[in-house]
Figure 1: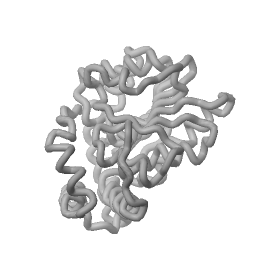
Figure 2: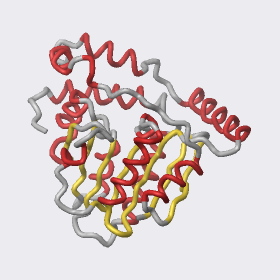
Figure 3: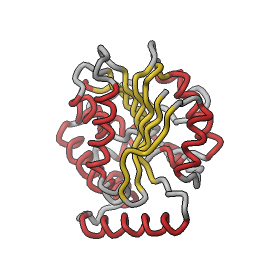
Length: 253
């Protein structure tokens, strides 16, 4: 997508605030990013110029970490919000390719302009916004675009199967966040303050109120996700990391 010029200092300030408030919504977010990057590095270690897709990238924190770890990779950051993409493009620079697209919407794959099979698809706290029927279709579409041996790595809020264990896992995650998250800013206040910034306000006005897709949501457990992934064509599926109700699931094509 074509980006306008934004002052680097403005982009850096708002990306930093975005990353800070996101800590409220992802247990041990930095460790989750590290685990996802470790998996992708392992799977693509023998590939020349691997192609990696980050779905629901926001400004691109995870995508930027992948590009830093895999300097020869083509990393594509995909998000529906043009302001977040512009902030990321201005802050992280040309290491990433940014694409504006709504995951699961008709025509979203064409917007990616992919010219070869993908080696890895990653996502962090984004796919839980999709309803089960949409997620089933998206999993199938991604499986078709990944090379054999490629991976889908999803770090998200995913409940354990047993209700009591799920309740305890949620409690553990909430207690961890209460101990270590030191920001008072949340999603709503970040957007409210961004709308008051003289440099960002005109951009938000151009985006309009419909820039955030409707949250369908799903209540899938670990086994529910695994079933959809196997149905989509992934041959091996499992969790490689958990803290509270947050998991990193890996599906091998």
